[in-house]
Image 1 (cartoon, rainbow over the protein chains, first blue to last red):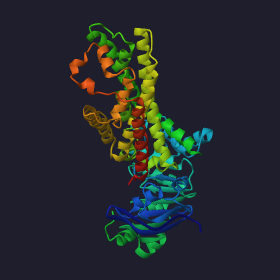
Image 2 (image 1 turned 30 degrees about the vertical axis):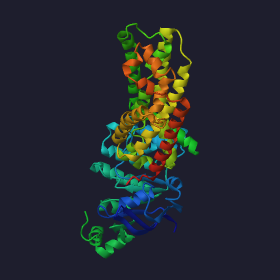
Image 3 (image 1 turned 60 degrees about the vertical axis):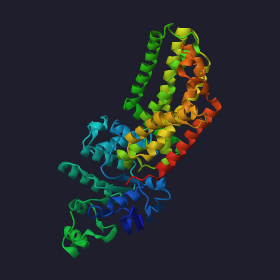
Image 4 (image 1 turned 90 degrees about the vertical axis):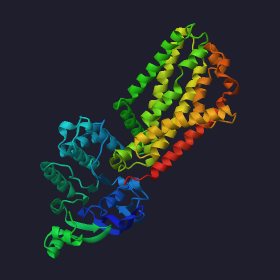
Length: 241
Length: 269
């Protein structure tokens, strides 16, 4: 099976704080993998390294065989990402923002316009396409974040707490969108919402203190620990949120 | 897609930022206000009305150094720091673009906006001189050229402050302190002690006006005798344009290279 995301002995220090401790993980192509762990476990750090936002202290990370540290632009062309709560340029409209990012990814003309309409419709922001983002709520920015991550139809989606800040209806709609696009893409998805992860992902990686504690299918974890929640609580030392 | 195409896209959308945030209009308004103020105050305060020499009036109207500093803090103060401070970098940096292309695009967009401001100011000066004296001295072109170089050097320094500061406010304060306080004091002390001062950034800014005549000529053109300033006029030796250009080029290149080098290493954790 092709491995789309490969993480090898990834170590990351923030000054003296060890955020990732020789983390290794392989994500097969077109699989949906959830990344679970308590606050400070190293989830966001892992995703930020994969997105070229930070450089690891040591270790390697590959997207489709491309080293994200050595060739970040090439690796990033394969990724769509939402990291933390997305913040946009408030003076721009969603259409302008998506045009800007689309152009940076080599898209243009009618193809880009058509795709922008599609992704804006997908995240249900049709009525807001020409309104400046300064008027947007957190949930609307989250939706727009998903739209920009899907704009160039990337084979790999990296999402960090994508439904944070959404209202209950928004969470359900968001989940459905991700489930839909996840069928065709590799999804690497960090979340605290175990229910959400269980609905979207086939397998989960549970990490704590920068170390991989378990990497298994949800079904196998449930067999072993009765529920995913129990697996999470047991593996993370009962300190789960 | 080539890096040059990506550079063009970054410049376009960064320039859109300057327009949308209305900063460009604000600084254009400031430039117009300052020029009008000079045009109104000079005849009101000088006994003989406008000075007889067109060169003296041109020097009085030239506010390029201040405009360059305003342009720098308005247009590039938050260029780098803002992406980290407001966390917009989480989206922008996940696009497949070399950081050096991104930072260069931001710098060039800031330069274009500042250049527009300077062009606007020189048009006002040229029109005013044409109306009052029916002539525009050719030195205005030299002043304009030096002003553009000075602006690019000030933008470089501001860009460097933006690269090292956590927030855009820090970059703004550092730039204003550096140009108006540190450089000002250093230049005065070096000048008064007869030491070389070509490497002080504000000295390059002074050259923008000095192409119209040295301090003694301008002061006497305004009816102010050199005796009123003690021996300051004797000590003051205007910088040659060549030396001023060298000084500004150093700030331009070193500031830009260092800011890009630092920004490329800066991480969005």
